[in-house]
Image (cartoon, rainbow, N blue to C red):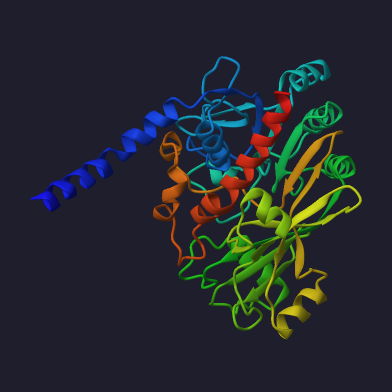
Length: 387
């Protein structure tokens, strides 16, 4: 009898746990933090390219000036999708210098999640999304860089990531960004694909395959998983598992110092787009690196094309003059819904929300890496701001 009663109590507690977690979140104190978000790659109202940021803001109860939570559909500058293939552009491009200065004075920090933009084949449903097309909107603008420079001069927090300075950002804006923040884009980007079989993997861009074939007598000999590298001149280099790679997914290796401070895994796989940058170590500290695990054949292929096997994944400048982070990958682009952000302590159950066996599952990257990293960055900055 006592055992049955105990079981009922346990079941009741389990069923009521989400209610307690939600109530605990409701009573978490709000913290005012004015965040300027720039996202020029919003194909639909899910806002996936900045959803991870909104999740972290909401979970930690960072709010806008009117004490309201951040709205994924409204609270950013960039491309705003509408019904029937209509859209609005609400970026910084039409801001005067005075308006940029005012924005930099009013905001506490800026996060540029993606400036890759929207292309015609992606936006208009009747076109082929696997082919390249003319751009509708995108690229880092002069006004964007003006804001970043103002924030740097104002000793504020700046968060940026791939793709902010790659194509279609112009050379002048890229050079200015690189000079401001002590890094350099090599011209190469890459991505892991779980299959290079064109009859199976519908996510393989047709232009990528076609560009490779153009340089290799019409041949595309790859079937297994691996990494494709693309240069700003459209050159394509493919490393295939077993043929070139001993591990097909890029490794994200974090320094011991950052592991301890940000509560991060020492090593994990990263399965999405990244860019290859150089860091000025006199300016920035590299706290994590990408490493490509190659065999002799893969090492020769990379060396032949001037691609390193190891390069920065996270670089930062954290000083009294300004705070700057550059994430050399689509850190903020993860398939995350906002519903879990309203439950205090949800991180204790993170293993239910991602696959531990599928290397292409980006949800695992959010829960294990992005969430703790960004949460700590924001917490530190908010604490300093309140002094």
